Image (cartoon, rainbow over all chains, first blue to last red; front, side, top):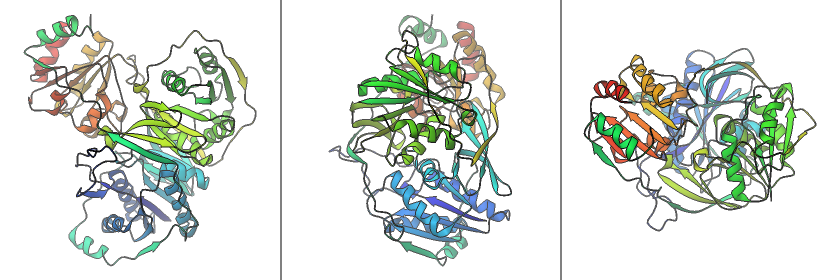
Length: 250
Length: 309
């Protein structure tokens, strides 16, 4: 079984992102970049499937400018076998990313495609679902458990009231939630080995996609500030304030 | 302008999140229809028909839609969407699952999790876990939008009298099936619609200690939530999680107990009307957003609070 994992290069989750002073966009100069945490969970799940003997090959794809090869190398160091870089300038939107990944699926024919449920920059939570729609595949979104069977996969999903399990025909798309697994750290020998793993670059045109824009960014601003209130000295004072000042309890 | 709202329901009842989506649709202007896709869901459709401001309710009732499988439901929605300028749903787990699939079938973008309507093409939405608010403009002729429910005050559930029309055709993509669900059953109000929420964090130390929150929750008719740290540590199940990747809540009163206040947690609760923080670390970031902060050992403060209520 072949597994395709898509990864995205995003601002490191430890960085506190701010709007630029002119409000045109977020400040991304000299900011540390990393693999999107949900994508890292996707890579880990694929590598575990390979270690369990379920998957025979793990291919990792990323879409973006040259710099996203760094994140492909990270995924290779975590245990993926080879990489595909779809070279695209700017910030392709989720629908366009889904179309490009559909192109990759066309040439790779994976049995299972694993993506993060959302990227921590745009917070869109769309690409996996869109890819599943475009390819007519079933989708197991927000996965907390993945069990591959014979021609099918069972996915346990995090939903509003708890957990739901669905069964999908393969090939299928899975998107990862936080509790699917805990990704490993890449060891130094594996980081060195990853440099020699194959990494191919393709263009959107190779995949038959002409990238469109549907949404433009008008501007960004900081969220409404919430100022700190007061410190109370005791539970008694707290209850008094809630009753008589805030009037939220009776 | 004609807007279609995809109802959030469990086949019997209409979920309150639908009322927030209707409120967002009213800001777009024009006619509002509601689509109920489910199985044996006449009651949910009748409830949608009673929502003021709804022109008509479309009912797609088929066994293939019983468990809201996205593969089937998205085909039904995309079919009906042909006659509309905008398709909206609440950004619930279900809305997030189904709507991007609808957008891709219609070959348009989705605008996720909007928090404000500027005009028919322009919307605000939080990005980077709510650290930045982006204003985005769509050039698609048909909009597919999910709505952050806490950003739009719900319309009333009663008072309208729309007609209910059945939608022809059934879609079964045949690629997915429902196996089962483990849904927590509780007498408490739902986390996302409760007027009071009390949440525990890593400071609770273990799952058993969450029982200390229950007595208080009972007295305040509150829902119980948790930080990601508490969920990841296995104290409570995932459906308790409040935060950017969990549930977004905005109750009248939010009580954070033993929660430090990581950005991702704040993103899920900072629109609450009144925030109370109880934490023994006086430098905890949660105090920067709290209206009332109590620096105290929660194991002493919680029993005292329960007794005082």
